[in-house]
Length: 405
Ligand code: AMP
Ligand code: GLY
Image: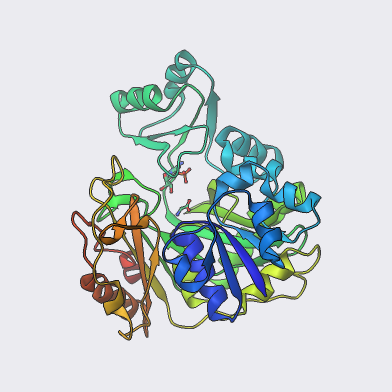
């Protein structure tokens, strides 16, 4: 099948890589140098025209911005097959206020919250919660619009830096799980659960990022936990919206059951990298089924038993002010190493000196292993082969899983 992947980050490289592994002909727009190795990259953002010109059978959307801009509605109006959330459903991610009100209305468990539109109300709202208090900017913020404030001074600073449109909410304790499903509007297929590592530093320290690494292991959720998440979160959300595409529930597994931290209307980045590495089903066929109303009935995904781990190598200065233009070396050296390492490219470009850094999260080095410990070792062995000036990465991706099992 000819398939267009919209986007140009590590998630999209992973989607494109998996499609090409399954024998599909992949196009990427705007794409990145990694995607150019597994398909044809087409510059530009007029996706409808690109899809028509390339005569693709199916399009899949990676990032939230084109979804929020209505690309799915546009393709539907033109009668083209596409996997993604429509503009209205994209509000679930684009606005935290919309999303929290939605959960409250539909009865989906989430942290107790107040929404505020101005600073004075926000400062007063702080009195309604105990520390730590979670302060969230309303709009899209690439994972960086959330501050967990430990005391009043931090909370006030957070209100000033993220405001005035805010969600202020109670802090939830528990294991954080990324639970992503694919919906055709009616039928829903769950992907295996994964775990992200959002803080920049080891042991979950330092500021939040878009995600510094993720792993995927069949034991993150028991069958009962997955069913519970489907029953209390996913099915009510899909029934209320007719959601199509990927619905990502960022869950906190609290003592009182799963609670939604956030909805995203797309696959996670970097969760997609280990997910694609572990997925055995023909991804193109699954996506085509999802683009067809009722097409996912009876579809089941097959996963390798082996866990997979993705370590993000980030640029100097990420997440505050990532530096670009550093030369990347060693990617080719990982081929043939244990665990079938794949280096998914995110913030990269071809510069005068070859492959260079071009964004905060540069590479997602992903590998499998006989068990989680082995997958972690294989991913880090591959990381050790790769270098660029100022590169930094977490040393504890997957350690949460090792502690649990
Ligand atoms: P969000 O963008 O809403 O997912 O928030 C980013 C990160 O902040 C989450 O992945 C959590 O690690 C943390 N976080 C957000 N909301 C809460 C909360 N209510 N309680 C505890 N941690 C939270
Ligand atoms: N990794 C978190 C996200 O994609 O939002």
